[in-house]
Length: 148
Image 1: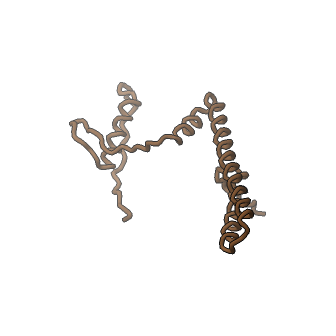
Image 2: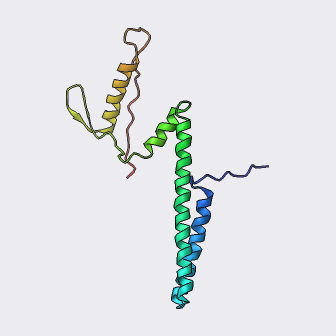
Image 3: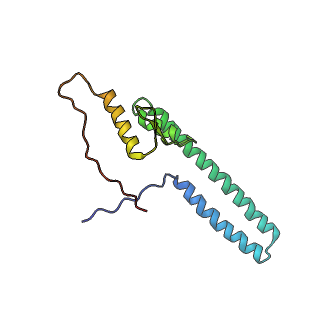
């Protein structure tokens, strides 16, 4: 027999999903009441229920964030990568490398040349130049085609 397909988690707490569905039902009920010129007190009651659900949703989100933060702090010594990836997820600045300087102090912006420069830097730092058995890797030049 084929095992059942595992559903991927959305990362949201299940309580939040239930509250979201309930909020949608109440909103549609409120718009129906308003369009039918329903009892103003009943409409106000539905609005109050919506406000309570929004508050509960905020509480569920805050609780989920607190639990994630606690997990990250607990794992800081055993799994620092988990902690730093959690901390980086809150970073507002997503930066990329836009240019590099080559050995002649010229600006390089071509992605393949930048990759070659970074590879040269990496091999110069992490290889032993005095070892006779270590050679610089020689990768074949591939042509990069743009899909557009």
